[in-house]
Image (cartoon, rainbow, N blue to C red):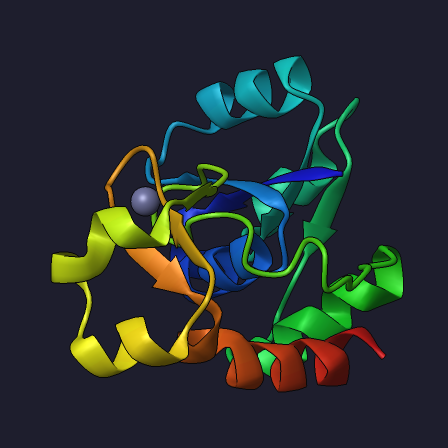
Length: 150
Ligand SMILES: [Zn+2]
């Protein structure tokens, strides 16, 4: 399941990526282009724009809420979001790229010493080179994800 979100849903985009979903953030008002992208890449459109809900041949989820939790609960009425420890935090929340595990020794000087000492696994985004370790967002993300996916 892959998504494309219109530009008013930036926060939701990052959260779907944190859950592990391939999520394109569509930062344009060109509605024809969003149609083409969604159609070609078989993406489900999530939007607050009523106009898009009438598009044929596309699966569109219309959200009305402004708060993230409300938006997720609206999506859940239409789509079954799944949560798995295996997919949680496997994708860069900024770039949508799958992150890869990196050799701990190689990033010694790039992370705080305390983090280096206490963490075992580190991941890096191939696009922005940001380094992730699960303690940073892990507990919050997990708690939140369980709440929204249950
Ligand atoms: Zn990135």
